[in-house]
Image 1 (tube, helix red, strand yellow):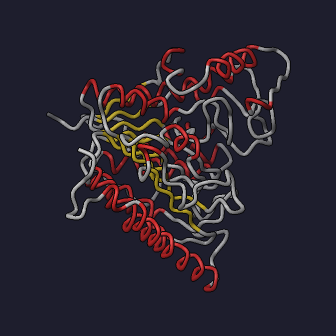
Image 2 (tube, helix red, strand yellow):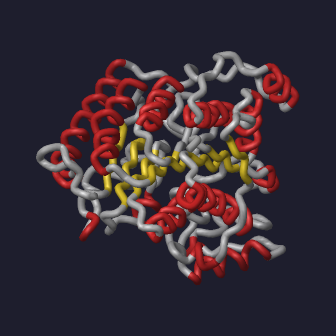
Image 3 (tube, one colour):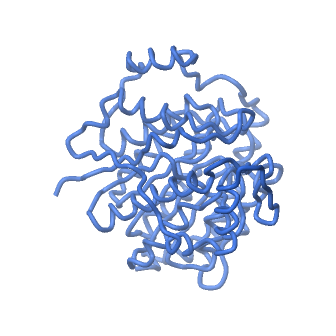
Length: 385
């Protein structure tokens, strides 16, 4: 059987707007898709490009509350501005705009469709560019996220009898997904993120390890400012990778946020495509059915580059280092420079880098003590299957 892959993308993703002053720009999806297409990665023999599809209330209710969905629908249809801070709706972070419910459903439906393609049609990998809304809670919007696509898709996978690893590589902690499965031993959640000490959402510390049956199945690796490629890869290699391999899931779900990059205006990590590519290639080597979703990233050109890397690796293709000519012309007409800088902005002083390295080594030691005995048995055997 061929290793079929699905890229999930709808041009309709660009039909909505959070506001001209909001840091989240829907333009990222068109940029990512057009760069993937320019590299010839949409017309490979075993590649399908799929629309996001639709989603039902019943499917959304596997995670979200009825009251929250009703209010989100009501506000989405209203002609005037609305707000209800009990549900996190209508503030500067999570604005209400016409069709916001349809917008949120589109991304969630895309992730659910990716999960379905893997389970029901035998696809080896699927990537929903418009997914990754990991801050949405059961009854509250948060962090630009209105519906939690990963939680809904993972609940579908659980209903199909699948065990899941959820790996979150966004610079912000995946708090909404952690909340969804904090008591569940069939989902191993792992989040590598900038420390929440002074950073949104203020969660994701080493001591958050799950509760009840889920104790030991929540893993957090908070990273200090100025964590660079070498430190980031160390965290992945010494925590995430061995846990994923030991848990041996039926499906790997990854949130591929690109706001870890050095140029990102909202974060203070120092990651480049070197570490990003390294991790994506190691995930591919696991040969686990793989559902990837987008996520954060506020340097839109580098989001496009990052997600093109993900799709290329999923399909076993190498990318030429120079951007394709048609893409360069397109972005020039849009007002972007044709060179995308990954090594600009904030650099780490030696003292800052040493603090970040010391911190990650302490975190690794804590996780090995609290998590590894649960997931990895005394002889290296999984405690799950």
